[in-house]
Length: 124
Image 1 (cartoon, one colour):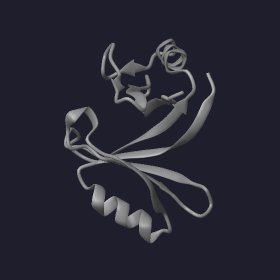
Image 2 (tube, rainbow, N blue to C red):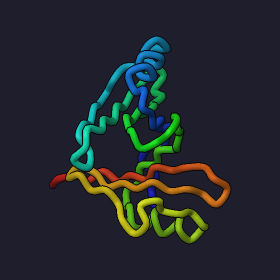
Image 3 (cartoon, rainbow, N blue to C red):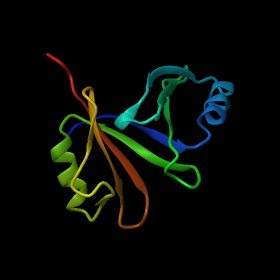
Image 4 (cartoon, rainbow, N blue to C red):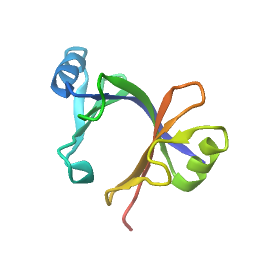
């Protein structure tokens, strides 16, 4: 398993406020992915001048803001097996989300921290 990127991801009902805060700290929007899973769900990837990234995802499925570690990998199945063998729970059970350009799932560690596991699918 090769990690291709690693950064925080904030899940929130208040995406605009959080994006505004990070813009005030010098972050700029780099990529916006909208309508994930056929829902109005937007993920905004931001980067600052030092090369640090943060993702802010809008969602109505959480009662309060949550933060996870976004880990992009080159082999989704290998990485998923790695984490599951160490006691992580896939909150989507045996499923993942595939939206054409990526595949992801949400994992919870035995001690309670969260990982958003992603593999970008490159078109040949």
